[in-house]
Image (cartoon, rainbow, N blue to C red):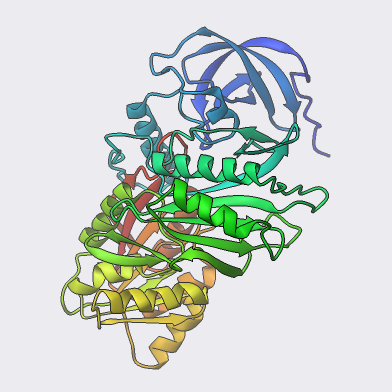
Length: 457
């Protein structure tokens, strides 16, 4: 019978602790009798006074009361609400140290898996703020007034915010314009407990290169009261607006967007450009949110892939074709696959828009489609993957190993699933072509992207 662990701390207890490390989520780690306590807004080398707020079987959470001894890497925060909401949970850590933390995060995970890899310093930004080109902002009623802001971490309590710090200022301005106009016409905010009210979210997309803007009003209903007046007021306040869309989402869950869009004004999409390639972006399109860093990330993926004019490339999880179309001029042919039908339609449109004829896009699951392509005699010598946070399906890795491309370029947004998938690829005969290159797509947060190349030689 296993011995029951008795926690050495109790809820509401106050104590002084030393911070020894940061978790992958950016929480400070203190230990009492080897029992870990995770503390928001605390940094390694600091001595802090905390209050225990939650005790679990193997760990606890503490709330920072006071920093008694400051880290040399601590900087003045912009606004405590950015930490409370999770918008910028690393804002208290100097930017050079944020980049080191992200490099260390990847290196440590590979080390724990007993894989000997070199991880290069993280490529950062000159201005690590105001970088996001997309915002999806919840709308709620607080004290009888419609408010826009962001949820408190681990809750659905809205914190009203006007300046989001990491978003393009044009987006912040647009959100306030829409908020004030919705207030003017007394449009009721959505209440997720009662499923009453209309406006759930305001989504804004802004082309960093094109300066085109799309606003999407996400609504729990099919008709917007005072629609004509609201549209006229928004267009007057934002004369450069290119697209105004009503998205109908009457689901009771926390789904962000519904499937039906109704045009209120302008065109159905906006344009932007990445790596000299034009892209049409619709409300449901996946498009990287930090264009400046995305250009660095994709340039690295293309460079590290060592592409030649004879290469056949498969781009799994291709989305609207951002990587595929950037690679197409360098290779013989690119085949892209994605499960989202609308994304593939956008990818085909984007290929035509850029006069790219050596790219084929199909709807389907990557693992099944790869088998079909192989049956049809299409054999890629380069596979590119940019999967969601959950990483690659084991069946996809099996299909990739069976196809046996010379190189597999892995663009990762989650170091933990990258390491897990790396172990399977290595077991299948691949090795990591050193070094791994992290890129900071999300400054002020713990998230990190990276490019890893696996090769047969």
